[in-house]
Image 1 (tube, rainbow, N blue to C red):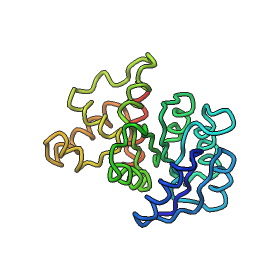
Image 2: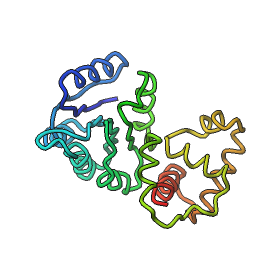
Image 3: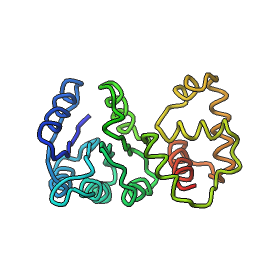
Image 4: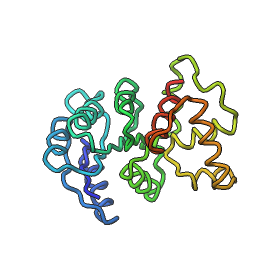
Length: 213
C-alpha cells in the first residue's frame, strides 16, 4: 500500500517508515505537522495515512483535526490514528461519515509489529479498527443506549466488529462457527434497524450505533 506518515517525533517517524518499507509498503511521504499531512494526502493520494494526534504547534489535537480535513477533501483516504491519547472531540467526526477505513490505536497498546501491520492492512481494506480503550471512552458519554435489545453474545460480536475483526476472526475469538457469526450479525442489523445495504457499510453503521450508545 501507499502510505503517508504524520508523526512529530523524528525517531518514531523514521521507525514507522522503516517498518512499513520492510513490510513491503510504499511510504509516499513522512511529515511532522498537520498542514503537511493535508498537503501530503492531496499530493500523493495514499491508501492509508498513519497519523499521530498531538503535533505542533500546540501539541493538542492538530493531527486528528488534520486527518479529518484530509479525509474530507480526499474521501477515499483511509486513516490509522496512532496515539498515546484518546481525543473524543474529533474521533467522533472521523468515524461519523460511515465510510469505514478508520483505525484508532493507542501506542502503549501496540505491543507487537505484527499487530500494528495487521491493523494497517485491515484499515486499508476498509475496516474500522478501534482500540478497546477508545471504545470504552467513546461509550462513557452517557447517551441513551440504542443497543439494549441485543443479547450478551450479540454485544460481544458487535464489540469485536468495532475492533475490526472479520467474521472468521470473530468466530475464532468466541469459539463459534462462521454460520453462527453471520446469524448474530444479521440479528444485530435487524435489531439496530439497519436496512439491507452493502454489508461493509452496515457494519460501520452498526459500530457507530454501538459507540454512540
